[in-house]
Image (cartoon, rainbow, N blue to C red; front, side, top):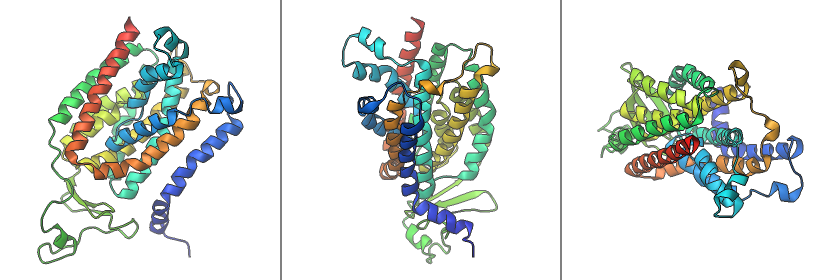
Length: 373
């Protein structure tokens, strides 16, 4: 008899580490065998081995808080990479090794796509993704992502960076003032009795046999959601507040199309402000960011011909000796992120995300200034 969909889902989630971690090995092998490159030999392929720890740390950080990988990768490649690649403190030497904007986009998008996909699967396995909410948010953001990506061909890059920096400052302010104590896993002293169907609770928590551990989700007739992750922690919330979230995802989607990131940074704030528990918000945001990033990538690659003066990305000029290290790093970081997210205190997550937004905003202002001067 054919296995049920729940059995297939559970088997995939049980062994997802094997599937996900095999993917970059297949990718690296395919790149080595088939990709058009500008060099050959061991020296070429090992030239950028040192990018691995930086992208591992970056991927773990951004996937822990549910934002776009390019939010860290692009500033790193602009500000830090030239210093390390040149091995010199001379700005003239930095200019010789600096990557072009087109190359930055390619490295960032390729690395981010693998990292986000890896982390999204890991968060689904953990039971921290509200897929119904994610699909509604993606559907609302799609037209804005497409519009932003097409606008990117005609709006100057300094304007992109300035506007996104301002948006992140606002998001950082909102996050530092948001109440993240609501809706986390149950802190009721009788929670264990409730989970066991004891006298104080009288009902069992959701437990889906198609998922790992005690994970499951139920929605009552009034729209109240009870979600249990694979560790047995429960989260209670509603999916209300779509209009409020739509405004943030509209702005964030536009920036996602323009600069490659933005929907995750503003989206996480919108979910928290509508009382979605912080860990569910982070997990759900991964699906939204992953799908909109893929859409933005497609438009950036193939949409140049639709806009006067537009350009298309030439894969033949991709620095493949860089991505063979950045892709495995981001996939690994994506797998680590759910465990880091679950282990950190909520206030620690809030401070880390808010501070990260502020740092990224400063980097974007510097990028905007350098583009104008």
